[in-house]
Every structure is written in structure tokens, then in C-alpha cells.
Amino acid sequence: MDKAEIPFLSATVLAELINKREVSSVEAVEAYLDRIDSLNDRLFAYLTVCRDEALRAAAESDLALGQGRAVGPMHGVPVAVKDQIYSAGIRTTGGTPIFKDFVPKEDATVLANLKSAGAVLLGKLNMTELATTGLSHAFDTARNPWDLERFTGGSSSGSGAATAAFMCAASLGEDTGGSVRFPATWCGLVGLRPTWGRVSRYGVMPGVWSMDQIGPITRTVEDCALTLQAIAGRDSKDRYTSSAPVPDYRQALNGEIKGLRVGVVKEMLHNHDVVPGVRDAITAAANSLGRLGAQVDEVSIPMTSHAGTISASIRVEAPTNYRNLLLNHLKEIRHDNRIGFLTNNIMPATAYYKALKLRELLRQETLEALENFDLLVTPTAGVAAQKIEPDPTIDSQKSAGRTPWLLTAAFSLANVPAASICCGFTSDGLPIGMQIAGRPFEEGKILNLAYAYEQANEWRNRKPQI
Image 1 (spheres, rainbow, N blue to C red):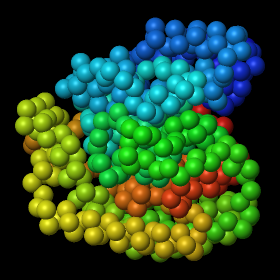
Image 2: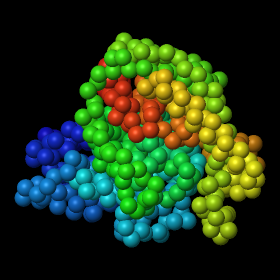
Image 3: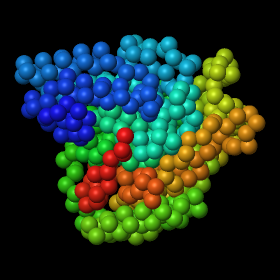
Image 4: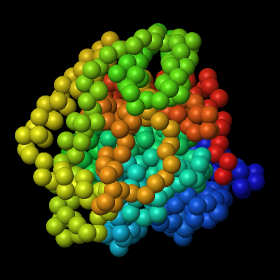
């Protein structure tokens, strides 16, 4: 096939073609590198491109295949990861020039797992500074392939841009309050935050310890299942990972959702920060699920209305993780992030304690709702991608909290799995995302509902014109 067409294949199809030796891994890597060369100076998706390393790994993949050696489910498939994830011998900046020369000595477990599955690392992806803001970049701001004047959503901004622009077959992001699902919704992708403890965080720069989780960002649900399969599971290096068996996520994608109980969370659908166009798209998506056989009803989870406030109070954990930066590099942290760090650093212990209690109430309400419903549906964000604007300065009246319409924090606080999938477009041609949440460790059920919806609707066929 024409090499220029390779990046437009799904990761799943590409893996099959490489396995059949109809496409070589070297061809695939070269095709993606060509696309990175042509687009990255406009999208700023990659902070580091591992050109030589990727070509060498691809050649080794092709050699292994030719010799009949064991082939993983992502054998030879070019992927990229957020620059928050340690990579042996390759710099890992965490999105800040403060760490521009930091080179880890070993791979994070998720990257090691991807390589064990056969994937080839193309490079490290842009992100908002230290993964603790949704929009503010210390390097060049990543651009949305659907409109270069708009944000991708963060903090996994480069993961959204690169995946949507066909600059990698699949990517990894890190989701604290929504940093996988946020770029997924604004870039028209599938993004999954797994259950807390489902995926190892060893070798990942921390954000908020009690909420951080690594997850895949892909163009299709099947690719999401494939990537999750590669990274999920118990890790002896991360004592907080679960020993629960990892199911076959791709096997779960049968598209059968008849009788599945789906609750549309009314506090999030009718939130005043959700614009009418987004609300209409979610309502239409819920109706589509009903036509596919699901039992769809509204459900009330009152504490979700307070998720933003609770999450902001929990974020006292972030400056605790980066106390050395506050002491020695304060002026090097960008203003938006600096104000957030300093504010959280002086938060009274009583406020943090109250936030923990409120968080537990939210979690209990969410789990109680999931006793009556198999899955929950909400908008991922109340608005589509916003125009890029400068970060607030010392003289600005703008708050550091610039994402009141982001509706992902509730499920992060509840530590339940949640995904975003494209469910329509605005009149301006910008993607809209539907969020699907489920019970702990029931990622397969979330993915299957998303798959049924994806296959029944045409949104997956739209591509940004770049």
C-alpha cells in the first residue's frame, strides 16, 4: 500500500497488517515520521521525537517477525506517550523547562508494558506544565487539529493533538481530574481513565497522588481496548496496583447492549456551564443508546455538582509533590501554575480534611447510582474547544481555574473508570464528547457501550482537514 496511507489505519488494523507482513514496522514508522515532520511545527504535539530509536526498534520488530519469534498484540505499531512518563535514555520534561535536561535511567512500567506488547516508541508528547493545569503550557501550546487557533484540552495536550492528526497510531496520557478525557473530547477521540489501581503509575511524574491514573487516547474504541490491554495489570513496583485479573477487553466488544441500564446524570447534563448544543448532542446520543436496546433514564447524583470545588481542595497534594520546585524554582514556574501551587500550599489542613469527607460522600453517591444502573452518561465538557488565549499574568483578573465547564472530576474523585467518545460536532465543526462511567474494574462494559455507539454512528469517519 502507499506508505502515506499507513498513518490513517487504526492501530488494530495496522497490527494485523504488520503481523501478516503486508506492511513492515519500518514502513509504518517512516510514514509517521514523515507526518510528524510535516505537521509538528504547526501542532506542537511532540516535545521529543525519537527518530533513530524508533527506526532501530522497528527494524528489530521486522527481524523478529521474519524469524518467527513471539509477536505481541501491538507488534511494530508506532505509539507515543505523554512526557510525564519516564523513558530510559530519553529526556522526560513533565512539560516544564525546569526538567528539560532530565533523562530517566529506566522506563515507566506503562512504557515497558507497551514495548513488551511490541509497540514502537515514536516520541514524547507535549503537555501542560507539570500536568497540573488544563490549558497552560510552558513550551509551545499544543494546537487542535480541528482548528489550529483552539486548545486541545489538557493536561495530555500533545496526546490529543498527535492522535487526532494521525501522528501516532495510539498514545498514552495521564488523567488526574480529566486529563485523558479532556483532550479526547476536544479532539474527537476515545480517551479512557481506568479504575484507580488498574494501571501502574511507577515511573510517572506525580500530579495528585490520590487521583492520578494513566490511560489510552486513541481514534477508535477497539484501539483503546488494545492499548489498555497492553498496560493494565498488577505491578510489583507500584504497591497500589490491583491484583484483580485483567479481562480481554477486545473480546468484550460485541456491541450487544440490549437491557443494559444507562443513567444520564441530570446534575451534569443540566449544569449551567453546558451549552445547548452540547446538551442536545448528549441527549441525542442517549436516545441512540436507547434505540440500540439500552434502558436509558435520568439519575440524580447531587454531589457531582460540587466536584470542581472538592477537586480544587484535594489538589493540595500537587505542591506537596513539588515542594522542592516551590523552594528553589518558584520564578521558573509559569504564573497560572505558580498561583495554583502557592494557593494550595497554604490551604489549611481543616479544608483538606473537609474535602476528603465530601469526596467520600461523592464516591458513595456514585457507587449507589451504579447499583441501580450499569453505566452512567454525561457530557465530558460543557463546551467544545475554546480559542487559544495567553495565560493569565500578574495583572490579569482571570482565575487560574479556567475550566468550570469540564465535567470529568466527579469520576476521578470517585475513583471509578470513565471514558470519553465523540458524539457529534458543533456548527463550527468542533467535536463534542460523551462521557461514560462504570463500576470499578468494569472498563470492558464501558468500552462495549462506547463500541456499540461508535459502530452505530458516523462520527468516527470524520477527520480533521490538516
